[in-house]
Length: 96
Picture (tube, helix red, strand yellow):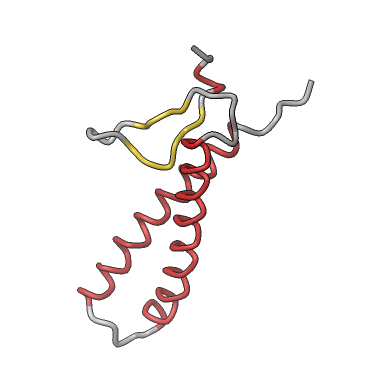
């Protein structure tokens, strides 16, 4: 098995909310490509959500329920984006 620092953090969690990792050197394998695809979807959805959230947050007449909903959605998107950033950061080559 590969050392923990060499495992790829996947863009989803297990049934109990624990992180999932992939142990492979094959960046073109099925699971690697699936993870790449899901990461791209998560980043795209976060970008779209931000575009939708800004007008709501700028609206001084927005009701509390609408603000709570957008805050919850933004928090979920931020969690996903941080997981992608962490995963990609761990896969950067380390200088010798």
